Length: 617
Image (cartoon, rainbow, N blue to C red; front, side, top):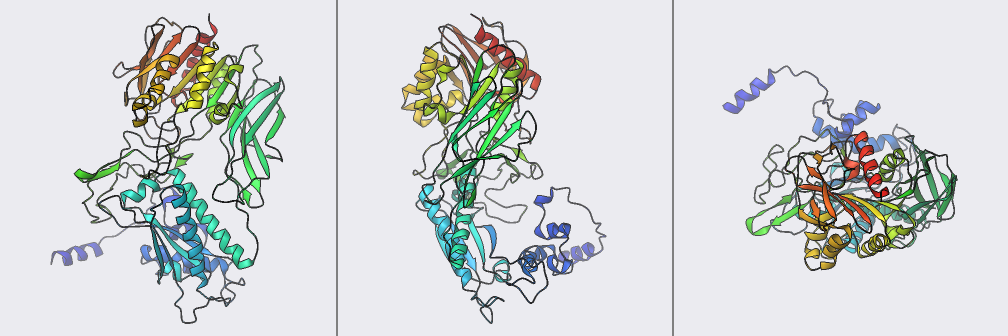
């Protein structure tokens, strides 16, 4: 009786049309098609009665509309595009109470009356497509991350997205978005990149087999970027190719160098055949460069961005070293005996690649045993939804220009390089009087839970420690900023058995770790010290936002030498946020990444203070 009355009441509601107020990319396929001008016969088979069925049905119907009138769908009207294949990218549901993986499932459909596509080929060709892609995914995941990754099989079933297209089609269930073991991989940008590359390679191999040609896979991004002045008017840029250990054809044979001047956009690029590039420059302008690798298979993703500028003032050249390479999922934990597990955004949100438009909010249900009951009560892994409409800033790989802008305003020239080029001795720190080392949110990070995958993104590798040690003992001056400078050397399992890390911090950097997660309110203030250059206060990005990656809670670091002193403290609790040291050489070590300081004027003033401190006797 109660249900019947509620239904009758609902029928009497006069629903008003309204916009979602969400970004278009979050809306359903059905609404994108309507916005794009696709006929309503394609995007609304229910004539507007059922958005849910319209959404998943419209996807295959859209493929057929695009192909209509072409050789692959000649008897139907459409846009005459001869589509080779269709692919539906899904994640699946399902949980385990331990760290068992759900893994990867492939779905195709061949059981129509004719078992053929309109152009006459057998629908079993979709099984071949599914096998190519699933094999590529599983083989690569097992090689790169986890030898136990599950291959769930291939289903020949009538799922609408697999059965409705008139071209070879695969529906992929990559992993379970509901299962903790799967999502420890699935939330990591490195895993997402490599899985996407695996899917691309599977498609490429399928199309090559169908058309009897040899394929070439696009190259990987280059690394070891470095720039230097050849003279007062010329910059030389160098880099190293990266070879794909999983794909022998992915070798670059040329490169494109993209150039940006000041705050303008990058140009359309210059093709070069060698891994170097020279260009003329004007003084007092920042030149930034990124490089892509090219072969017959296509163009790689871009490299990190390296910048340089020649000041018209006759001061020193500062070397900016970009050591912030990290991209990763949020921190996670597994208290198996207590039956709880999950992701800890408050400890470390992780680092998206460039940005993240998929994040909806931090996890709020950590009990593994709580089942899905409803989309509004989705059980284990349930999250808040307060970030559904925001694009979250990640690692842009574009920080030398931001640091360099403040260096240039202080009257100094600068060049920049990647940390790999220092570690490989392609750049010698001792060629420069001042060094600015960017560490951002760099820290030692694993992916998933496999012991196979190595820890990445250590703040100071052995090679970097040696380079900085040699530089300091040669009377250099170095400024280092990063949220995990102390904890990555002191408060991790590897550091507990490695006294060299701690000795490097105390003996060379002249700092020591006091505590991690030292502050949350985002404020820093100068304090009295022997180094009177440092004054003022500033704020940094401590909440998720679309402008700059978030520093949730950085380290407190303290002086570790009688000639070192705290120069800044966190405003909320007076824990030490930065130290300076003056002896045979000088260091300035800061727990707040310089690029996360909100106000450009404060960044400029701080950089000027640091360089003035280095310059003085």
